[in-house]
Amino acid sequence: MAESPSHSDAQLVAHQSPGHQAESDLASLVFEMSQQVQMGMENMLKMVNEIDQNSVGIKEEIEKSKDFAMEKKRILEEEKEQFQKAAYTILDMLSNSRG
Image (cartoon, rainbow, N blue to C red; front, side, top):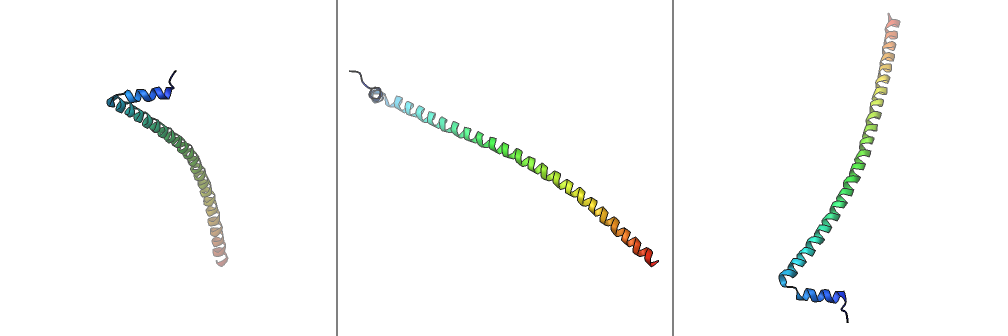
């Protein structure tokens, strides 16, 4: 009668020398740790990509805000000049009416 694979594996493990068993356990541990490290690296790569995408969006928003601020500054400068001209005109009218 043929033995099941798990029973054969158990016999192999039971017949292994302690040094061979420790090496096998260590190899399993290293493999598991490398899998965890790989998963961690993949997760970090995903996060880095998300950060890159978000930073592009943020840079675009900053550029739009900068453009808006520059346009607002230009409009305010124009309004300032108009108010100054109006004020000088009024001052000129007042000084001419007195003289």
